[in-house]
Length: 193
Image (cartoon, rainbow, N blue to C red; front, side):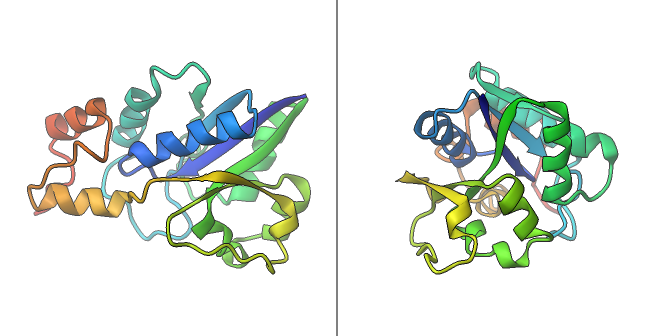
């Protein structure tokens, strides 16, 4: 049976830790592919800084050299808020003979109690969890047994940090791929008012 990891997010913008997270999951969990799913409007965010098309374009550029990385525009096409359990049900229906799990960071794992239908997701799918720096994994969590944990620790990069640096005229080349940096510069994204 094929193994697929689903990596959802705003990707506002996509950065090196997103790519590293996918690479780690692909290798450590012997996945056949990783599907990136950009959110149209995430349930936990009031607004996003860049339009869906720009976030999709940046993601396309970032993964173009990775043959086992793909993008699915399910959420962008719906043009509305989609919960993770709905997205996973969509993939289960689309890829019948595939083991599907979400790829998340340990910070998200510790907040699973806040997710809509977290128990349903755990029992029907489960998670690949990549450790984030300085985040202690709650081994007493009721969700712990539904997860497979990576031995690697991902880089401590956030899209919020990148947007702030751009707004303040600081260098972001250590945080994003060159193609992403070029796109942001060309489109004048995240400059603020």
